[in-house]
Image (cartoon, rainbow, N blue to C red; front, side):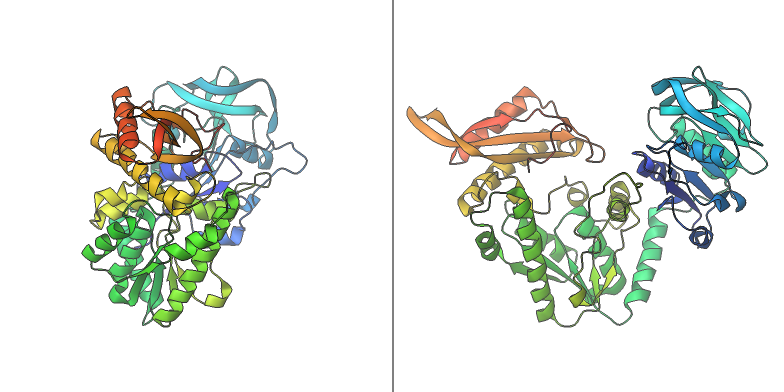
Length: 511
């Protein structure tokens, strides 16, 4: 069954991914593409509707980002949001100027005319504004359907063409009934069917993998985290023992992590190859304190170990990866010309000499969707709800040199932190919680003796996407328990401190 699709053209808004997520929450499939996508490609996608995102540019800039005008001639509904409204204005001879009073934050939207876009909503709604420009002259063929005290054209429509444009952001939670507006656009105006479900995704993906692999074999690197576990299990469901998963112990794993991963894959009935490369990795990391060098050493040597293992296992035509949609979006730089986006090690990071085709069964999914797929596959909940863990592992949670002794100290301290937060019933409510071993020693008193030992920092933050984060106000009793246990049970630590920095200005990880 072909899934109906709403495509989002990205002009650089910080909310672009949120638009796609809101549409998918309606069980309607949505894809993000750069604003510069060709009209030919859009036609091939055959969307039921198109959404133009916001962005940091102004349409009156010297070279503003613009899409192909032909999208307005495809006969499918279009919705322009914020900067997207400026795009609509440009192509239909409207006027845009910098506003005398910029509008950031909440605004009262007054609905002037009944329209499908506002079905089920009140005549006055709370919306979220984030703009310094506004529409000053109505585009040809359009009429006003809503306004705010600072914007006479807060929402407009060309009913004949099915083109809508709004100054506010319906995709953010601050727009109280923004979800209903997007639902009205996708379902009532575009006529999209709600056929994007976890079950339909699993069925289609399994069939696609079977077809792609044929009689070949797939090699997949796994970490035991949610992404690689769900991806490998989907492939296993499709091709069984033609999939070989490889777990590499890079020496900077959490306490007993290798045992946990191997036991889990055994329970799932999957073939897994364990590679103990701890000594080799620690040898490479000896004397290295610069965090970026640590990351590069671990990443580069992992590829070498993986290649060597692949060669010893026979011939594989395919490499499986747990790449997620946000990684793909960022790595192809759809965010607009003025924004630098990070690259990801698991997006197109395959050495050419390996000559293997990539299989990425999750590359169109967001993290919450991956978890839902995992639940439908009946994977363990403790895996699906596991907090994020950095690729370089404990190497970037030990400030300074990496040694076996320092790793063992942090492993035991970190295990206490995680266990106590789980015992308090808070683990699933926190984005990330972990320990950091600092490169300093402090004086202490233990058993009437002077000590001069290590300091462990406790970090706990909440976030929605990792881009921003707030430190968690853990209960004092829990902090007391964690501190007491670490100091009493972990030899080599005599002080625990709590990191109360937000992101920004700090980062979630210390390195």
